[in-house]
Amino acid sequence: MGLSVSELISGILSVVLIDLVLAGDNAIVIGLACRNLPRNLQLKAIVMGTAGAVLIRVLATLVIVKLLQIKGLMLGGGVLLIWIAYKLLAKPKNHDSVKCYDSLASAVATIILADAVMGLDNMLAIAGVSQGSYAMVIIGLAISIPIMVFGSTLIIRLIERLPIVIDVGAGVIAYTAGKMITEEPMLQSVLSAPAIKYPVILLIIAAVLITGIRDRKRS
Image 1: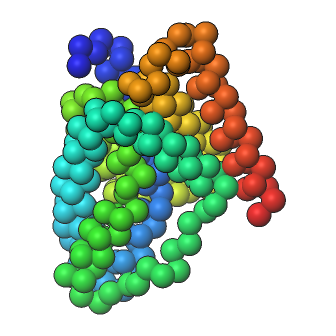
Image 2 (image 1 turned 90 degrees about the vertical axis):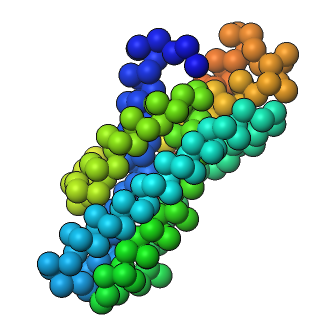
């Protein structure tokens, strides 16, 4: 894609931040799925389940990166990301329906399936911030996924102690949404001028943060 080194590094850092913020729920799912296994099988289930989940997530994200090059999908993806950023702030997820299992195979299958379903927001956000760079996606996920798996409890504690991490993550996702919408080929004639593009992006970020934080306080 002809990205500079600074653009590649900042993009990778954005991928890592988005994945870690959105992966808190996935880390909880891993813990719930494995909590009834014997201790000697828990790590094995986590590693095997995560390996399968990583493969599916990387392949699916690369497919989404390609799909976003189709006219109209950048706009749709941006609008969906706005909703994802808002939900991240305003509506914490409920994991009560996640079952725990006594067998290794069942726990592994649960981790893979839950990650595939719950990871759709991660995939879209990462594909949006990648600017079409497969290297950025692969490197970013390669850094963030091991941290998420083996440091899952630390991530959860960090988010609990510093809720602003969620706000920053939602802001990055909202920025990515605004960038996708303003770079949609069908809207280039209207939104390409910097005097219009950047105010639109700032407006999207502000709207997401204000409404999301307000509704979080209400609930």
